[in-house]
Length: 245
Length: 377
Image (cartoon, rainbow over all chains, first blue to last red; front, side, top):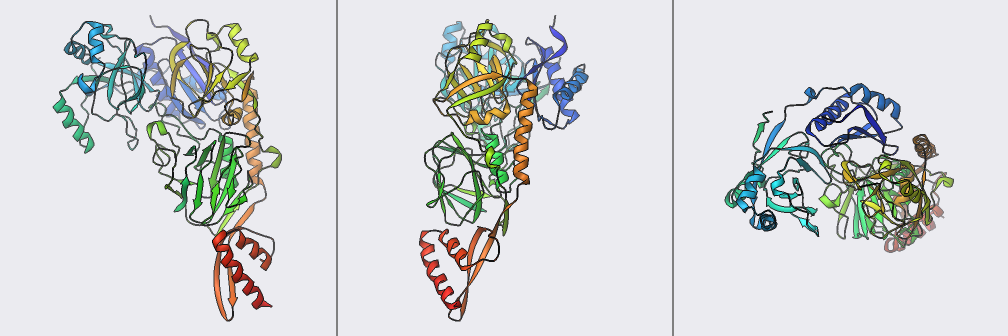
């Protein structure tokens, strides 16, 4: 049973942003409604809407109060709130070639000792699922993924690393993610992908978007080097398939 | 056009504009100036659009040499800017001649100064903005603060005439060490106990040295949550007062992540964000709740000040050229951009102008002009 509110809740987020909340839980259905509402709002091209940030179960709508009355914005959103998810494009599955363990996965040994599984089993479990990208956030294109197996759930690092290389594939509790750019981070790194997920010279600057699915595909070190070179020479193409629902 | 050579980058000087909107859904932070009022004012003072890119100078200013004649304005924190050895008045357009060196001293109030240059700083527009986001090496000058040896360009060609503006004197902000900051409750004020809310609004908090462009971190009485400090991550606006498990408030700022997972008690109203951006470590902050209507009236008042600035009588800068006769030969001397004086240029005004050019050159020029004056007699 989805706990979707009968009407969107408007929560003040200062004098230049409005939180539009549809529910207070994480589920693919609620997240789909959020993305549909974001797309519908984009399509209005309402003067004074500065940015729309969809997350798990709410939107943060940035507006310019000089151009747009907040009551007008709320009315427009109420008129859109029964929008059907059918407006969204069919979901895609993007393959993320990943080399597990070794120098690319410095925490694999910890995960092995914590779970009692072998490294091969951890990789197979991690790579065996299509993960929904609920949202992109935090810091330059970090995809928040849902649906990781509890079998490989591990606690975060006690002391976060100051530098996690771009492409690092990491897990923490029942979450998994991939660091699009080099950044600090406290998740356990089990592998790395040579693909480039964030490129500011592209429009949009990200290879994956909220609503896509990611599937990690295990590769060996040799294939890692090959793809790395293809990425360098801009000849790498992501393997993308349509999601069978 | 190469316009500015960096002799010393200062503590943390970055190119910023109004920010990078439209890409938060991809997790790209907004960035942009911390004090958006001072940035917009500085731009308008030199005749730029308010959205032009300028330099945000933090705590200890850079030293910059102008490679071309320019009109500049410094707004925000008063760090005693000097052009060569001449004090630069704040919140006013000023001519900077080719070769002149702009330096800053210690702050006499405020944390961040904004240097606008006519035309605006020209760095590549990345995802719709020139703002620097150093953590991802995005935008600005090579994605990082400026440093010695960098050469910054400005947009457009050298101008023969620049129309600057005046800032309404009585509206110039003064930066104290105790800030009363207005906030709007929410979006997650219901995550805190009644006692927590009352603590937040009665206590005095201190700005800690860990504050930066990501957020202003405060020390003081902790604000307890009813239960968990965690929420389902959602979008976080500039000014969000986020309170993590330790109970200490942090006001999220320009370089914040686009989303966050801690409950947000309130949001600082946008008209008060500039004062928080100017708060120094050790400054004291108290919070007062206001309505959304009051916050929007404060936005209108801020806009009214900028409108008055735009409607002020212009301060005109013109490119001057002096013909100097020595014996029977006539020499053309370019004097660069100078504030236009009423009436014709007299020998006295020329002398003053020449002295403003710079040490080595001024000495030579004075001799020439003395000769010119003699020849006219």
